Length: 114
Image (cartoon, rainbow, N blue to C red):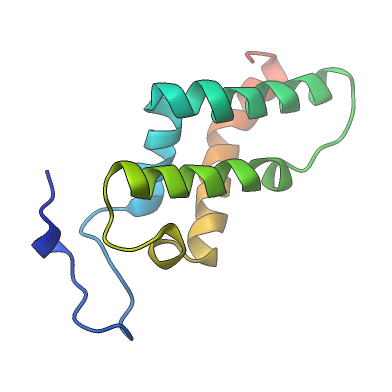
């Protein structure tokens, strides 16, 4: 368990950092939180799998962008982060999260596992 005083934020001008990899933690949250997985993650994966199956092209990043945004908000609310999702994650983080998901899931989509 992380205590609030373990966060490093001495000034509003400093970047907010945590002692763990927030991007990796968010990916784990997306896959393991039962409510988020059923309502957001799995439907997005099945939608892309269906598009792939019928031969339509799709942009993984564009398909996952709204899912990642919802995940960031729910993650920050669930774990009572001291700042809103916009302050906790930057654009680099968004790209990193989508890339991690694509690396892990694209083969499953191609194989029809969703």
